[in-house]
Figure 1 (cartoon, rainbow, N blue to C red):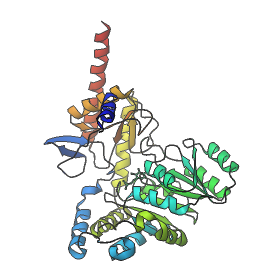
Figure 2: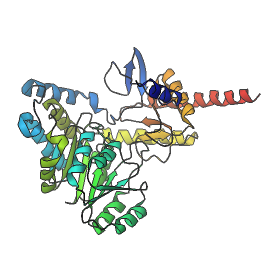
Figure 3: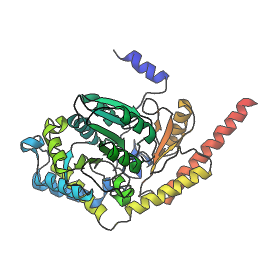
Figure 4: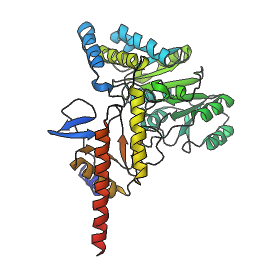
Length: 389
Ligand SMILES: *Cc1c(COP(=O)(O)O)cnc(C)c1O
């Protein structure tokens, strides 16, 4: 039934395959019995396989069992769910928080819950797919502003007569690795009396000494600022949170369909997230190692002439050309023991290799990546010369 569609994807070089590992998540993974240096995870701090997190989850399974057994509003929650909410609210400097099953479930549940047909949503054109889907599920009108263009946003805001407005942005854009202008955006929201919704999925555990994007810019949490974020990336666990004023969170608890109509996460997942927050709140070198590795890698890449597309974070896109060229580099890396995926349309407009560097990559891992990239360019260039002769 779908042969034609699949063939079409294949012809365009857009057919994707799932790669499953047989080892823990980490800087080196095993796939089909071979080891690869892994630049494809969002496990920025290496917490997904941290002993303290594994042990917290194991203990919680022994005490509370595994499955949650019901949605949160029925009997699905445990004291761990509640403790996690209190702790993440404190961590983010907000009054209250509520725990969601994933970042995707959070955005698709919260955005419709906050808006009705009279309202207008303003969304950055490069926002994450879960925000786009949240806007589609909402009855409000969604207006897209040009990427990080605060002037454009303000022009659009001036034109609207809606009473309730909500500006939504990723803090760190997941495919480009650049950072939103939160000071500019929050100033505009203050002026236009708009709600400001920040998706801090890639900022939590990464920016602002691990606290997130608001801390990075020294912006104080306000009742009209809603901070959403995930436990699934730098925190090495799973699930998401939204933190804000008490009444905002109370409303979300009572109206977000992805919270109400879905089974709560297993208690061991809550326990793992609590343990991750504890590691981040204590003295740790993880965040500084992450940034040290990021600086080292970006500096070498730029010095050796690779285009890192304005990355400002541990997400480092590398532009190599059209789809076949990008896929060819990604396969070359794979053959040489490096996992760095090609990201193609429709996920992004311009194809690229997307590297994510973590706190737990070693200097050797980074050197190996650079060496293989250099060899690739050398053989690629000599192929071009040969084809000219
Ligand atoms: C990954 C991501 C999500 C989805 O989070 P999951 O917990 O993986 O469902 C949402 N928003 C952004 C910006 C993301 O990068």
